Image (cartoon, rainbow, N blue to C red; front, top):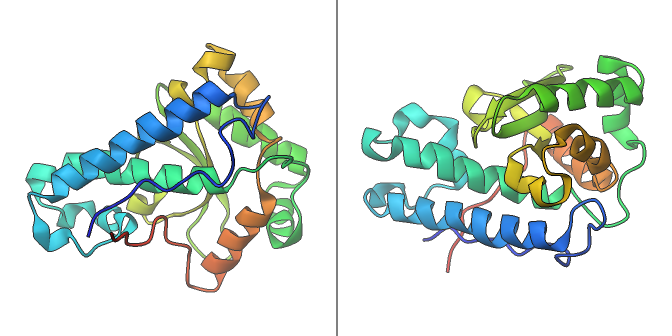
Length: 216
């Protein structure tokens, strides 16, 4: 069993002008590709972990052998985070949320514009590399959180409904150091259908696993 880099669900230039082709190519092929390669290399040292999905690996990092725990945290986290990230974006996306996630956001944060402001602010304030998330711990809970590096909310017992990558490699070629501009533009490519799918799966008690166990 080996973890594999998933194909993008759209062309490299499909999210322009929000995300440019060069950034998408480097981000997917090189950065995500490296996480997958490095995760497989780490797991070769512990074949007893070969049957676990990347998500299962990061759910309980204390159960991972100490000699590869850091590598699994970084690379399985990066694999899970990015597999989710590609799916929650689409060409001609954006607009106001619809369906159950729209209702949940309104109940937790009020107007969608207020939620966007709080989400973007958390992304701006994430020091250095990391992610900003809309997450839940179950029930009616819905909260914004940020994590450093490739840490996933999953490792802290939270479910990531969706998140935005605020590593510089996600935006620097187009936006340079203007992270707030990137965060504001990103809403134009969010895939609310996929977000609702993730939210529904979570509420049903069967959250989407990103990624499921890969095989050759």
